[in-house]
Length: 461
Image (cartoon, rainbow, N blue to C red; front, side, top):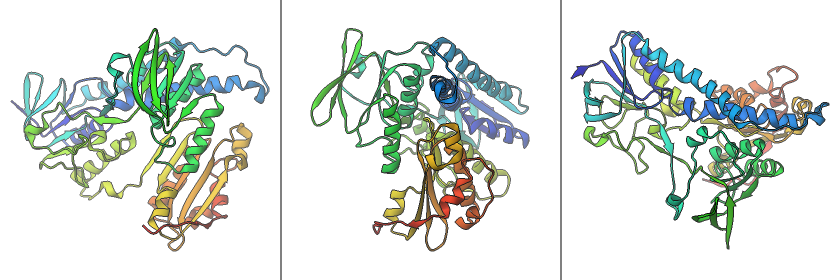
């Protein structure tokens, strides 16, 4: 048995920086990784998908060359080269994480499957490690629904999509949220026929109806078939095709060459032996943590996707910051201090912070709203990318910014003007009076704030 000052299980976004901080503090650290270094983001999430989104975007713009004054005829995808570019980008990050940990003083890397033996003991391969501080950062994976016939057909997930180097003739996508929409648009731009099936009444149902409608219109204009309120009841194999039977008020069949399952995520907590440590999980398998990311067992923390507190790379990194600040800097940082923020990386992207319009309406608080079409933003007009709109919500009494939705070119970047103002707890008038650079998308945020109107239809919560 080998004793350590800290054991870290997993090398996603929270584990490696925590190892570096602890090793830098002179602690003896063990970090355990059973798969590829870097976790979901580096290997099958943000890094590879955004590299492929960039390839798809370049092809999309090239096909629109006539609008910009040039002609790029015969724009065709070479999926082997697309994959090679993606793999190169991934390998730089993946190898960088692995190299930095293996060269880190005071840190030993174990490439093994970690399993708890007791609340203070973890088995890594043939060795048993012990520590009074254990940090779990094991991430999540695709959730596969229990649908008749699915086990009889070949299907893809966000992870296995990273391995294909060919163009699907017709890609069926089950799930109309972030993963499904990003892959759907991407492969449509590569040249696949794409059909997206969503059980709910609209795409990305957590967003406001106007945002959802605009996204649906954007995808439809690119030739993507969107089927909302469609309950998938079974799958069959018919020759080389996969047949999806859906109930849309009546039974119908969709035939495609390939199938992507994009129906959510599940935490990688079912094979860690958590029951031997007494660590509690919720009904979905997420490790139950408090506001400082401590599990039900003293001395065990859970960070990243496996704790159900965010599910994004940036929330995982923030988990590391919270734990490190509380352990070493004498601070008392909490998960509840952070403002919800995320992006959907279709083109144009959606940037989101804080409360949605639906959230504000349910709260019943008096509020103001501002909205601006991207076609009225000069920078968007100059770029020829005028789809979407920006929307912001403000408390009518406190002048506090409550939330914003920016669907449009640079929306994922411009939204940070709003997010930073919210973290500063400054009134919206501070942002309204700021002088922004021209020509940018962000310069129109003060213009939008200058035209706020009362939000009608509030329903007491």
